View 1 (tube, helix red, strand yellow):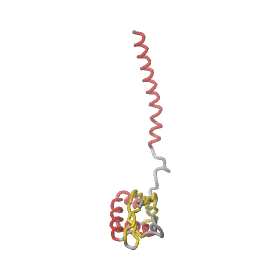
View 2: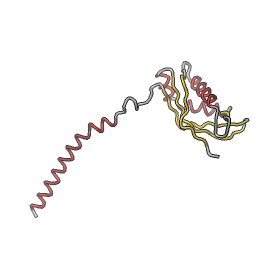
View 3: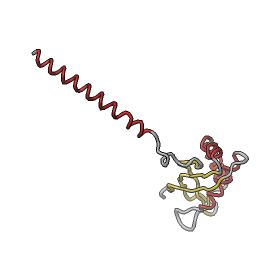
View 4: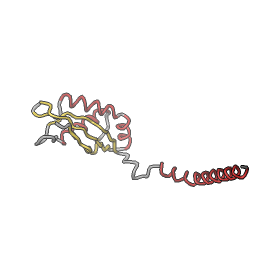
Length: 147
């Protein structure tokens, strides 16, 4: 009985030492994996707004909603940082502006006037704070309500 207990203790000790050695070799790899790579960190001049909902209208009547991710490229890093931190002001401005004047429908069903969205986003962002300049607005992950 004594020898089986001793064997179990030795096996348990060996397993503990092995796990400790393995754990110390894995720690640096985990730390390296947690750090974002420069290409994965994103673009510092871009403020991304996800799940933006915009109404689409035809002849003044609401026909659909478009759900988009807006990527707003700013002229400098301070402006991009401000827009990222104050994204709720951009969302509020877009909601108010499209409530008064919805985005026109494109040439067919489930289409939209992209130039109107770009103009609207540029106006809203520029109106938040004097000196903010938008370089480019791109729309990604566009989805419509299925009707």
